[in-house]
Structures are given as C-alpha cells and as structure tokens.
Amino acid sequence: MENNEVKQDNTFTIVGDDGKEVKCEILFTYEDQKTKKNYIAYTDNTIDEEGNTKVYASIFNPEEENPVLLPIETDEEWKLIEGILASLSKEDEEKTE
Image 1 (cartoon, rainbow, N blue to C red):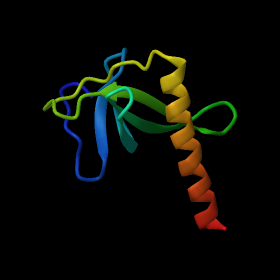
Image 2 (image 1 turned 135 degrees about the horizontal axis):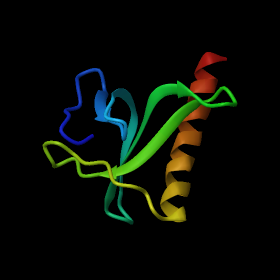
Image 3 (image 1 turned 90 degrees about the vertical axis):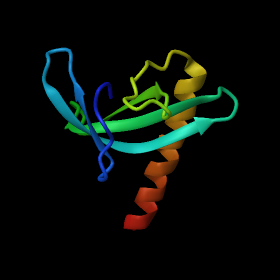
Image 4 (image 1 turned 30 degrees about the horizontal axis):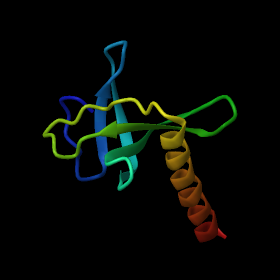
C-alpha cells in the first residue's frame, strides 16, 4: 500500500513487481491484542486455477500516512487470518441462503 491512500470505497492501489498498478479491495483489517500487530486482508479480485478469488494478507501500521504492507511470517499469524476469513466466508454463505 506504499504511497497510496485508502479510498472511500475501501480500495487502494499497489504497484506490482512489474511496475503495474493494481486496484485492491480491503476485505477486513484486524488488530490482534496478543501480537500487538495490525493485519489487513485484501483481494485484487483475480481468480486462481480452482475458480477461487485470490486473497492476500499483510501486516501494516494504520497510523502511517502511507502504510507499507509487510509479510506475515508465522504459522500462528496465518492461522489467525485464515480463521477470520473462514468466519467471514461462512457469514456470507448464510446471508445468501
């Protein structure tokens, strides 16, 4: 998210390794009391080989004017993010039934 602001529609633009700008949609942000870190899950709305929407997660500092996305490095943190995503996915499924 470096050098880009979150817009009112919960999107932001990142610059990929190839220099191209990619618009991303924020799925959720979460501050964990245990790790004292802030996490962001987002998607660029592309589809993987199995037909699933690609979702990414990073650590960020919401106090920074132009937050930099940092990698999640521990299995514990990934399990935390995956649990939140599973919970949100289940809520969405229940709303559509």
